[in-house]
Image: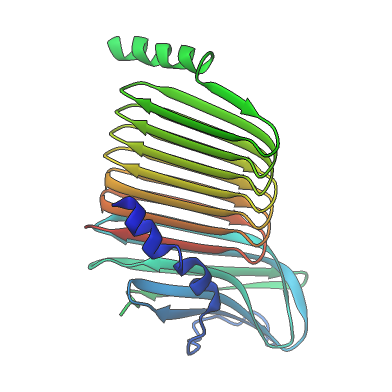
Length: 129
Length: 167
């Protein structure tokens, strides 16, 4: 049984990196030229979440992207961190996909730090289809 | 007291006949049935493969691989089982499947381009995945109730997928 489940879900790994959805801007603006975004896209089993930095100039720094999910099946936490380098447009710095069973909810937070500033943004919801 | 003695016996087993070591291009296949079994595989080099199957309760499987394009496949059926996979290097692949209650799977991958997959069915399950490096992918599926997933990825271009279902 678990083999079947795994076989079904394994293709989701590359899919999570390949999708593109309508942007939803939930970010705060620490400096006028840098915007933090979390872009959710509903899937059949849950939601794909992209952590995005949008800057007018090339920007480098560090990111931390945390996705927490609660539901009848249990809890999950995904924590991604590292360095980012963005172009003068939107750049995806992290991708996390989470399944949402009936009654489940998620909260995602993206934190960005660079030499002269920092910002963060949060997204919450069911968000699945 | 009995459990403690049995656990001590299991680790004594781990220190003797349950250990297998191998170098590049080797394969280690272990099947164990019953309770309180312990298995450990250590491999270094390229394209090693470790396959572990344990059926019973309170079993423990440990796989350590150091190198490139290694593969670890651990399957456990029963309750209170534990699986630990530790891979150091690039393009390694780890799959862990557990069926039963109160099982625990931990996967640690250090390097880039690693892939980890964990599937668990039962209740009270726990899956921990740690990946350090760039371009890693982690997928975890749990079916049942009272589960816990903790995925930590450090680096760039990593992808995490987690699915929990009550059925």
